[in-house]
Length: 366
Image 1 (spheres, helix red, strand yellow):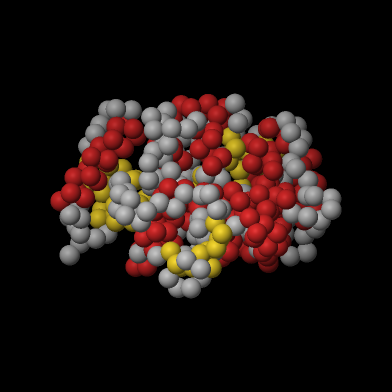
Image 2: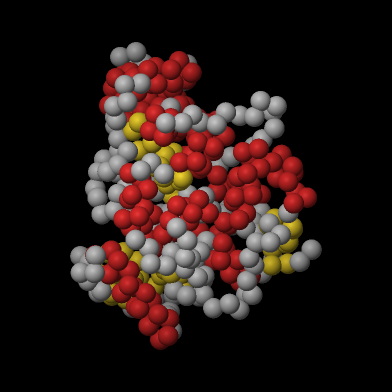
C-alpha cells in the first residue's frame, strides 16, 4: 500500500479544497463541492469563497441565500453550515440523532425527563404560522409548559436539533449585520426533508462518504467522523469500499480515496491563501497535521483566521479599520513576506469594496 507523506496529503487537500488554483465554477457548484462552509460567523463564508473562486462576486452568494438555493442551518458537528438547499434536505434526516445527542451533551441535566418528541411537536406547532423567530422567542413560547429546563436549553434543543430550521436573511448577507431568525426548513424551501431508506440501507451515508472524499480526501475514517460528527458511518464505508483506493500515511493509518480524485505532485507550488475563521480545510479532519503544525493545531477551533504559506498555516490575520493585519507564526522569508503582502492587499480591497488595500505584517517571532 502506497504511503503518502504530509506534503503529498497537503497538496491533495489544497487541490480538493480549491486552494491550489482558484476555480472558475459557479458559486452554487463550489458550495456543493465543498459540502458546505461552516458559517456560525456570517461573513466568513465570503472570505472562504473569495480564496477559492476566480473573480468571486459576493453578491452572487447573497443572491443564492435570498433565492433559497443555499441555506444556513445546523448540520455537521451541530454547527451552523451554509449548504445547498438540495444537500440540506438530503442530509438533515441523517444528522437528526447526532444533533440531539450533541445538544443533550450540553444540557442533559436540564432536559432530564423531558419528552423530546412531545417538545418537538409543540415547537413545530408554534412555528407553523411561518413567522421567523429567534431562539429565545421560541423558547419563551413554550417555557410555561416546560419551565424546568430553562429557556436556553429549550431553545437550543428545538432550533439545533428537534425542528430543522433555516436562518433567514438578512442574516448571512454580504456586509450585513442581523440577528438569527429561524423558520422551519421545509416551509422555507417548500420541500420535505428526505426520509430514511425504508429498507434500512444507508444511501445518504454512502453519498456523504463519497462527497467527503471528493472534497477532503485522502482521509481516514476518523477524519470523516470529525468532519460530520456522525458515528454510524463504518457500514457506509464498508458498503462502498470496493469503489475506493487505499493508502497509508506516515503514521501507518489507512487513508481512503476516490480513484480518480486529484493527488498532485508534492512539489506543486502552493500560493498564499487567507482562510476564514473555522474553515473546514482545517476543521474537516481529526488529524490536522496536513495543514497545521502540531504547536498551532488549536488555532482552528479557537476561531483564528489562518494564512497559508506553501500550503501550511504560517500566520493568522485580522482586520483593523480596513487594514488586514497579519501575525506570523514563524519566520517568513523575504519572498513569503512579499507574497503575503500582495495577497493581503487583494483581500483588503475585497473586504472594503476597493476602499483600502492596506496590509500590516507584524514582526516574525524569533
